[in-house]
Every structure is written in structure tokens, then in C-alpha cells.
Image 1 (cartoon, helix red, strand yellow):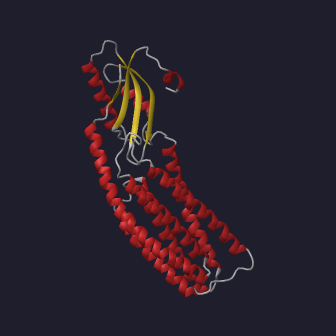
Image 2 (tube, helix red, strand yellow; image 1 turned 60 degrees about the vertical axis):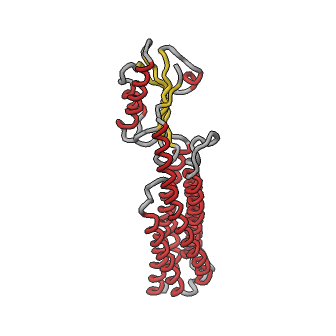
Image 3 (cartoon, helix red, strand yellow; image 1 turned 45 degrees about the vertical axis):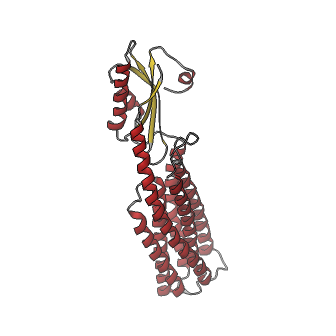
Length: 320
């Protein structure tokens, strides 16, 4: 019997059209946020040199990470509008995961540097104090206002895919960093202790690192093609084997191409002398099982129907 793909052409076309429309909306929001963030980044860099503030410098570094992630996310949103081809059967969908992983890695590096630099300023010798606390407060408020505006722009579509979620989390963490800068300036104006600036820099780093690790972990799971969370393959096998005319199911594989795009494939052993009409019914029921009966709805499924006793080299080389 031949290999059969249970996903219909109409469903794929509708899914691709929806993805293209969403990417177009994402592109506009990302471009607006990117422009706003870039302007404030240059302002914070100038401010960090004028004030000699570590917290403002780290916040600017975090904002530079925002710019790189937003720029990559914008390019990703544009490329994801392109339809799949014979060379790229999934289109550019996987690019959003690569973008998220790269952004998380950059954010992690910036966070570690911030912790090291904060420690040197707090416990080292020869560090000069803040030159102008009033300027520090001004630049901190400027950065916070820009981040809040960016959050408003991105919020409505922040859960659409990993790409948009990465951009939203970047800006949200940077907003928290700007809050730390503002608080440090106010505390230094009240107490005169310049060391609070380094402490604020460390706080910003502590906010950055866990988010970066979580985002990197999720991206790596997708790149390693791990089974989507919430999809238990043992339960899937058991459920599929209760479909009429199905004797056994083996070589189950499930992974995620990109956010909202899980896929599943399996070899299905069917009864002997099964008719083509019955094969069609089996495929329809198998597809319904994956789409409706599990926490993760899988609409793109591929099943290979086999007679009992049929073996291939792939079956013997891979786990069941």
C-alpha cells in the first residue's frame, strides 16, 4: 500500500493564508517598535557616557539586544509571508525559532556581563561616581516611556507566535530595566550613595537572565524536534490502535515546525484484505484523533498504511 498524507489541500491553503495575513500585521507593529527603540537606544548610550552610569549602559545594551531581536523579527515576519516551495516545503516558518534562539543567546551574554561589571563596581576600587544624577533620571524616564509605548504596540499580538513573544518579552524586560534606572537615580538623589547604580545594573541582569534561559530552552526544544508539550505518544498510540481495522501503530514521530504548527507521522498496520474505501475511512479517523482528542491539536498528519508483517530498514533503525 502507498504512503498517504491525511492533510487536505484546502486546510493547508487556509492555514497558509492566515499565517501570511498575521505576518503582515506583525511586520507593521515590529517596524514601529524598532524605530522607537532605535531612537531611544542612541539617547541612552549618550546618557550613559554623560552620567557614567552602569545601569543606564546595561539598559542601553539590553535595548541594543531589543533592536537586534526586533530587526530579526521584522525580517522573519516579512519572510514568513512567502509561501512554501519545492525547496522550502515549510516556507520560512522555522526562521522564527532561530531568531528567538539568537536573541535569547545575546540577551544571556549581556546579562552575564552586567553581573560581572556590577560586581567590579561594587567591590572594586578606583570607580568614579555618577556625574549627573538628574540627567540619569531624565534618560531613565525617557527609556521607560519608550518601552511602555512599545509594549502597547506589541501587546495585542504578543501570543501569536514565538517570534512576537520574543519581541514582547525583550521590551517588557527592558521596561523593568528602565524602572530600575529610575529608582536608582531617585535613591542616589536621596542618599548620595553612588553604589546603588551598580546594584541597579545587577538587578537588570537578574531580570534578563531567567527570561533568556527560558526562551532559549523553548527554541532549542523546537530545533531538536522534541515532541510538543502536552502530546503523550504512548497515549496517542493507544488511541490510534482502537481505530477500526488498525492492528498496530509504530514509528511515531511528533515535532513542531514553528509556533502553532505541530506535525505528526506514524506507520499504521492495518487488517489484511482491507478495501480502498475502508483505507480512506481509517485515514479520516486517524486524522480526527490527532486533531480533536489531545491537548495539542495536530492538523498536519502523515500516516503510512502497511500490511501486517511489512518491515522496512527505517522501522528497524528507529525506535517504536
